[in-house]
Length: 76
Image (cartoon, helix red, strand yellow):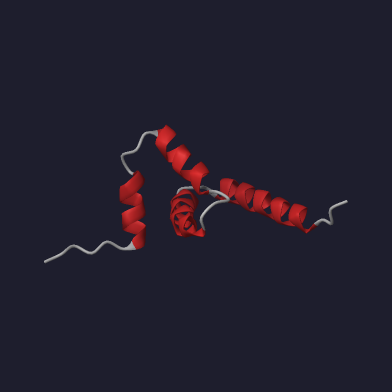
């Protein structure tokens, strides 16, 4: 019988034994490029979110809100 991995499991398996540099390269290589990488970044963010305390979660939300409002500003 074939083993079926879901997307989360496949992404976690892909990065689980990688050195930090490879994980950083994968993340940075996915940002602002092919949209097919977005689900992978979402899975990694989910892992970070689940392991974060409320203070760090608020910091991430604040950073996101700042960036969203910054992008809303008209450009001169």
